[in-house]
Image 1: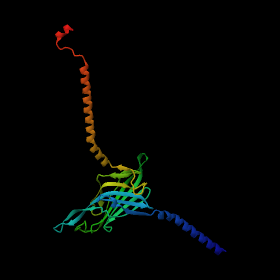
Image 2: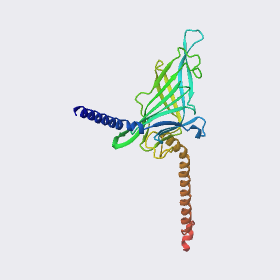
Image 3: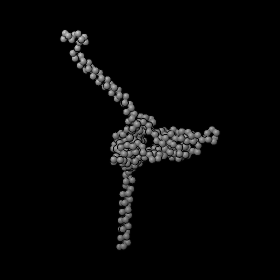
Image 4: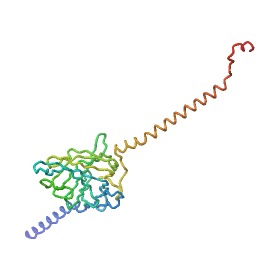
Length: 278
């Protein structure tokens, strides 16, 4: 009987353990995430469209054109000195996509050239002053290999490097909205290759890492300050022209009424001798 009770206890413990493990791993199974490259939908050959999906629903979307400017060393003709050259890397439309989504943190990984180049962009959601919830880009990393000779020609001491931002707070956007900016936005990343500065230039941007309510569709756009300023500068001549035209119309109207009122007043004779006959 004691042996039978021990077997039953052991079986119950095993079932309980499996049930607990099932609860622990259930969210991991449900939260299946995959990356999709939708760049073929863009009419701009320089622009990529990338998405991260969770359980068949879009949870992060990025649409932009990107160019990276990466400095690297080459040996001078004298065989002694080093010269710094610049490699210009556009983000190809055929890049591979991976990513992660969560309620307050998300990220997207874009890689190309057999993982010789990988761009990681990290997003966070936070609450700021007056209980205003926003999201922002908190970190950008670029992994590259100067042994890849398509862009790094005759690189001195070629190898793998990582360029990263430090204390980044970029593209700050109200929660529930997508960041939109046609103007170029540039970030500087510091490389492990002798602290060289890597430039990440983005333009024609629309990004939303959280709160996407419709599959593959961005939420209400939040325009960057640069675009707002440019639109104001474009509209300013029309506004000034309208105000100037309005001033001219008002001046002419007042002058017209002044002439009309003046014409209705009795004219007094200018020759004083005529007053005697009045």
